[in-house]
Image (tube, rainbow, N blue to C red):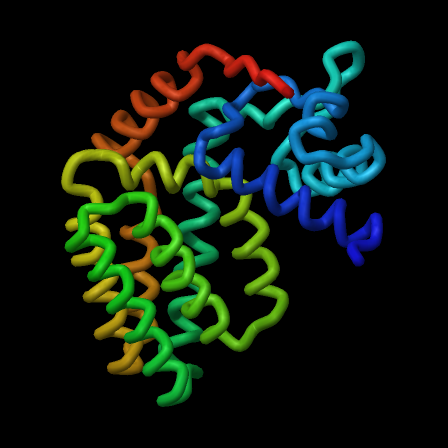
Length: 229
């Protein structure tokens, strides 16, 4: 039987996932009563889930407006991707020095899964396989504090990293970049790994223009009207 704490954590994961995949859009209002009806629970675990998400910066609670999905402006978004690129570079540099042969095998398995999603031209599947690939590198750094920081920012950027994968040819290019990263890690070349990951994550030039265009399309979609039986 689920406790209230377990229900709130499960709801937090579900709502976070809905935000990541665009079912709940930046700026969208999150009504506790509507969510409680949607998930068939009381308002208490919903409220606790929203508090958890607010502490992570994924939603924002404002006076007289209630809770909304966090909105990130273009300037802040590019700044966050810059920091994410440096965190990933640090993880990669350490992973190249510290990963075991077993961890190399795990990374290669994650890389293979990304290839299968790429070949299937399935950006949604690639999104999750890509997360597993990057997480293997975080873990390979063997620096628990760094892993926590990387995962925290990665979670805030999930909706925007997912949007990038819908840009034409991005799956193909992303996988090619992964291939170079894997080779550098297995070769033990920390600086090359860091440089490749930094380039892989940094959003600039045309990639930034594509991301902003995708974001504008996302926020232009009318808010869904839920009907409950």
